[in-house]
Image (cartoon, rainbow, N blue to C red):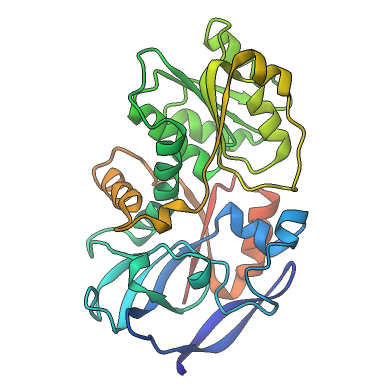
Length: 337
């Protein structure tokens, strides 16, 4: 039933977000009411809001107008009411919702306690916020390369937005000797270099395949991670894989079908692995717990990821910037006045 009121973004139709004051329901058993401090825009949010590709047009998580705050799923806030034995009013939490609870683009959200992790009061909310995306990256990399990394291994990351930059750092942390970063935006490649990329490729002016082959002595990458969310990026990624290499696809689909350079993959006996959504379903949320630890001890640097901040009232402008990727944007945070 309706409980408190506050501002929220409402996706009223494809491509149109409106901000309105709405009522938020009180929590049921096992749920809490969170007052959001800060949220962030994920690349998948841009796809869901714009719904330009066939895959996202047909996704239909909710009918229009969508629930208040949808599709926000990266947030940090304070528990203001609880019907959970695990959380009390005043607790600070990281929210990592599944589709049913995506509501971070709102002043409040009601969410099941299984999608919450406590965060320290002494930390920066915009830094802690990054643990949501990093948790999904930790989960994905555990699928892409679950065992020990052999000495001298090389990886490449195609698309170094926020997720790609996290992959780049985590690959280094896991033991890959060389990591090559590939992107369309010079500003993002500059950030990649500052975070330890061994080589960067500015496409389409440079050939990603040639740079990777040069970096690996002609062998190709042992692991290529696609984090761009476009079919063009995925095709580039497939051509960079070396013999017995692996291709980890993290970006969301554009369409139901895409072109695959099958002969290239066949000759190299490459493995193609996907990862989506599983981190939220792990009992106890271990990938997100690992992410909080990696950020907390400084193993993964996230201070440069939030490049722009908007008030929730201006969320339409924030999404426009996220889509057009102007002004060297990497990731956008939203605050609530």
